[in-house]
Image 1 (cartoon, each protein chain N blue to C red):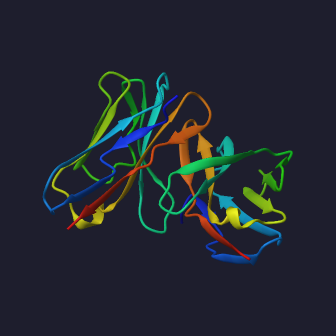
Image 2 (image 1 turned 180 degrees about the vertical axis):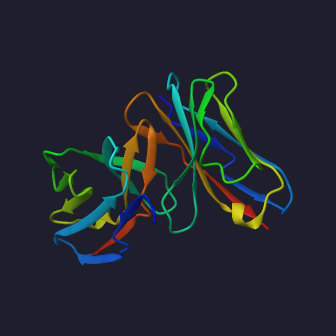
Length: 111
Length: 108
């Protein structure tokens, strides 16, 4: 079956623009996670959903970051008024209870 | 101080060498532990779970010391294909925390 997919794979945004990053988890996976990975660093937790409920958003760096999963499957991470420090790879992962499976990530570059 | 700390590396070793990576974590309530592998510009993939009793998967051996809050990964007879970044991961109630990763390069 299909793994976790993310789109777009690459996004270049001018500073101040809003962006929306999409994650399609593995079908049937209840848990969905978003991470931010800066160059040379490990993934940093952003937020976590169980079905449509956002159980933890403690990792979101500012109120410019917003995530949703309205029907408990596809999730969108939105970043408003992008800043240069938002440049990173945004990874989505889903889990059916144990292992997290990662998508290929969206590489965001803010110019 | 980060919640999960790893050897920064990089480790450059010849084929056939044995190499060991260390990791410490600060949250004593952590429940499960993993090593993930991440190839350049790819997503992380689970390499193996880590148990207190120690576990082995072929050339890879992982060890957990809960008292010292220390995790290790040993790779024996390293192959060129082992070149990657190895991420130490600590989990508590679905809250997974990653170390910054240790880069390994295996040279012919």
